[in-house]
Image (tube, rainbow, N blue to C red):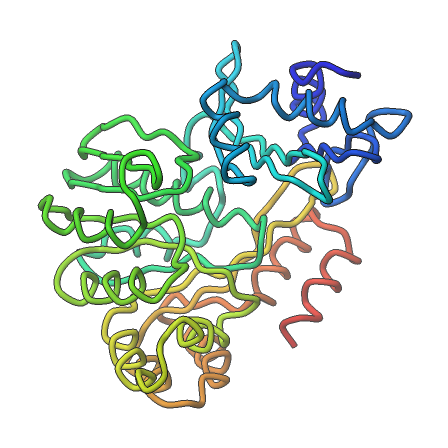
Length: 343
């Protein structure tokens, strides 16, 4: 199979999440969390290069040759959309292609707890969607933006790298800006957004101190800020944010976070028995008790706050996993494997 469009068509038919193109390996699909070969033999460096470049325009190919790494969004004749990362690997060109939904999925379809919809009604503050790589964070944030867009008259500005889901303005006005194309950096785009009379700002990822500081300040002073953060568990959230901060700013960062935070949705994207996907999630709501914990250094108490705060809409991961198991949609081994990290 040497045509990239045939490979992508096969990937969609198998409900794959990603396609991996690597010289010296078969072409691989990520299906239900596993890498599955779809070519009988390893592909050559030449074939890997040709498949990777087939996804790029001449201008994008020139940018890649200069930078040696490239992230782009592409669509095909059937309007299917893909996020493509092209890179050099030990001198050979390869690519990873993420298959995307063409439009954001409604929160109802994602089957998230009701508190997620309530968080979308907040007028200001910070809402984080967290988890490790490929756990559906961007999909959930897109669903939240879609909910606001459908139900409220707001001005929504998104700053993304790259833009994964396209939002058509409905009740709200949605402006989507791509880092590297519409603005230089997340921080610069965020500063510009604050001068555009925003009600909601969605930041693709909190990935540097300047962006985090501006986002927290905006959230504290009257804008609803949505973003994602790579962490393995909610009780690591402060440590993760502080890892970006310069020495001596711990207290200031903790204070900003405690004042700005409204809630955290921490996700695990699980394979279901019928071959689909479902999200298991842990929910933290920023009560007074949670804010006090965040101002201090004992953030391991956040997990206790989640367990005892279910009347506020909080949800431990175990409760989410229990529900999925009772519904008969996940296997026992999936349940146990995920729960092991939350005991």
